[in-house]
Image 1 (tube, rainbow, N blue to C red):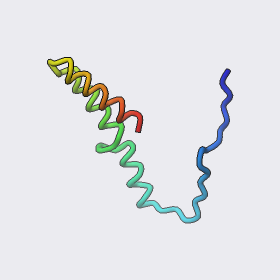
Image 2: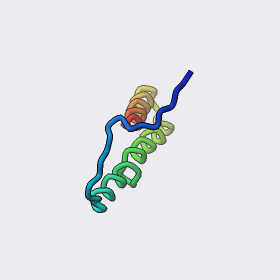
Image 3: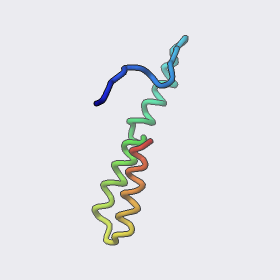
Image 4: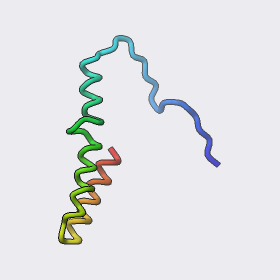
Length: 68
């Protein structure tokens, strides 16, 4: 059975917001050069690879990018 606790692993206490830094962080997560875009590119390119070794490598890299 699962028990859900809505609690952060590391508590955060923001004293002064920084909009410029927040914009940079968000762009790294979901922007065109972010982790999600990179993982989707790797996983998408694997379908065009003619060799099984290269397909496996791209799959490994893409899933590792998803883990970040």
